[in-house]
Image 1 (cartoon, rainbow, N blue to C red):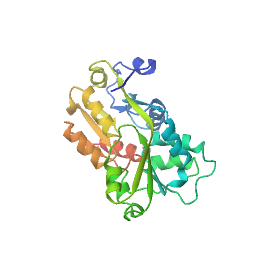
Image 2 (image 1 turned 90 degrees about the vertical axis):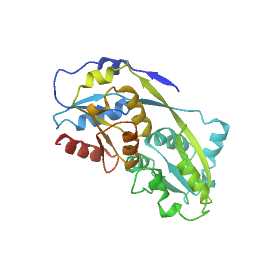
Image 3 (image 1 turned 180 degrees about the horizontal axis):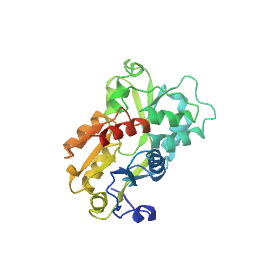
Image 4 (image 1 turned 45 degrees about the horizontal axis):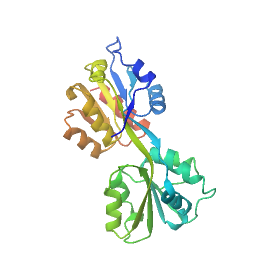
Length: 262
């Protein structure tokens, strides 16, 4: 598994804040963490940015470029994450100044959908922001109703593809990015956070990575945007896990606000 070193910004924060004010660990990329941290200004908390994974684009290769230039062969395009928008939709858009009219687009959740709208895409969004939610959509229930393209990162879940194949769909992947875990000194996150802190997590990979980095899981409250991630966190030994309505910033902050009051 690839690993990325902490940058100078992350290293400079590997110190325990003096205040006993509740601390909120933000685990996405630095830009997203900065935006989220700014939104926490009205609260009496200390936001600390600790990206658990970094992401980069991958070369599509000849096969991937053939898929990108043949988008009109597909009936459905499913975009599995914001990174799939950042590294996938952006690339495919270079080949298509105007999207095929008959194409149906799907976003895994509202945050991904918002990013897609910047490319003049009005995606279909499931009620639950995960693969299970996508599979529950009526447009993907009709057996054998066309070809599906899934834009995703490398080594993603196989549930979506396999379920669609079982229904009779023809499914292809366009893998447009890869992730690398970020290395932190052993025990550094536990030492700097203290005993009263909250963590915002958005993926199974992030939950698993945090489980490797912290010493005492009982010292923190984990906030996740789905029941699936809550189940993963509990299985990995976290004892205080709170589920937000979805992964939108407003939902995660609202859930954090309630958690701070308990």
